[in-house]
Length: 320
Ligand SMILES: Cc1cc2nc3c(=O)[nH]c(=O)nc-3n(C[C@H](O)[C@H](O)[C@H](O)COP(=O)(O)OP(=O)(O)OC[C@H]3O[C@@H](n4cnc5c(N)ncnc54)[C@H](O)[C@@H]3O)c2cc1C
Image: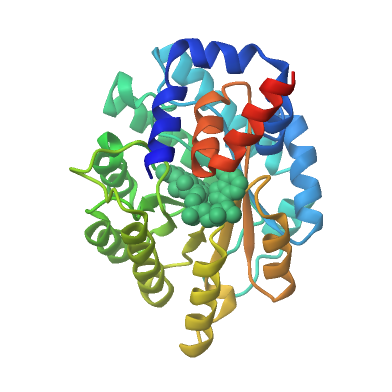
C-alpha cells in the first residue's frame, strides 16, 4: 500500500505528468492498457475481445470536467458510443434475441463517470446529463454503469442511482472494498436491485475512510463478493486477483450458484490468460476497455496497482 500511495502521489505532480505524457518511452505501456484514441480504434480492440467469447464495457477516458461545455461534450460522446454499439453485430444479435429470464448479460455496454457528466459543475446538471444518457441506452436496450471515483463522490454517486431508480433500471454502479462504509452501501444497492461491480478501490484515500492495510481490503472484498453472489442482482466480480477468484469459484460451486447469475470483470491488457481460462470454464467474463486521449489519471492508477509496471518504465528510462 505504501508503494501504491507513493506512485499515486508522485504521478499527480505536474512535472511528472508532463514528462510521462510527452515521452515516447511510456507509449508501449500506455497502449497495453488503453485501446486507442478514437471510438473506432477501440471498437476494433473490442471486436478481438468479443471474438474470444468475452464481453466488453467501453469507457471514454476523462474525469472531473472543468466546465459545463466539457461535460456536454463528454455526454455527446457517451451517446455516440451507445448509438454506435447498437450497430455492432454481436450487440444487435443480442437485442434481437435476448436470452430468457431476467438476467441480461449484454455483450457490450458502457461505463461512465459522474464527474465527466459535470458533477463538479452541479448535481442537477450532472443528473440531467446522466438521465439523457440512460434514456438513449434504454432506447437501444443497453446498460450504463457509473464507475466509482474518489470517496468525496461516493455518497453522491449512490444517491444518484437511487434517484433515477426505478425510472431507469438499466444502470448500476461500483463499490470499493477499501472503504469502511461499503458493507452498508452494499445493502443499499441490494435493496433496490441495482447491479453492483465490486472492486478493491483504486484512489488515494486517507486512513479516516479506507483500510490502509491490503490484507483487510482483501478480506472485505471476499466477504462482499460472497454477499453479492448470494443476494445481489447480476453482480460483477471485478478483480485480477487469482487467489480471490479461486476462492470465490469454490464458494460458487459449494453454494450451487448459477454461473450465468454473475460475471467476472477485468481490465483491458491485464491477465488475458486468466480471462480466457474463466471463459473456457463457462464463466461470464467482461473486459473494461478504455479509450480516448485523457488517459493519464487512469494510466497512473494502473501503474500504482503493480509496482512491477513502474520498474519496467524506470528500466526503459535508464536504457533510453
Ligand atoms: C473491470 C474493472 C473495473 C474497475 N472499476 C473501478 C472503479 O470504478 N473504481 C475504482 O476505484 N476502481 C476500479 N477498478 C480498479 C480496482 O479498484 C483495483 O484497483 C484493480 O482491479 C486492482 O486490484 P485487483 O483486484 O486486481 O487486486 P490486486 O491485489 O491489486 O492485484 C492482484 C493481481 O492482479 C494483477 N494486477 C492487478 N493490477 C494490475 C496492473 N495494473 N497491471 C498488471 N497486473 C495487475 C497482478 O498479478 C496482481 O498481483 C476496476 C477494476 C476492474 C477489474
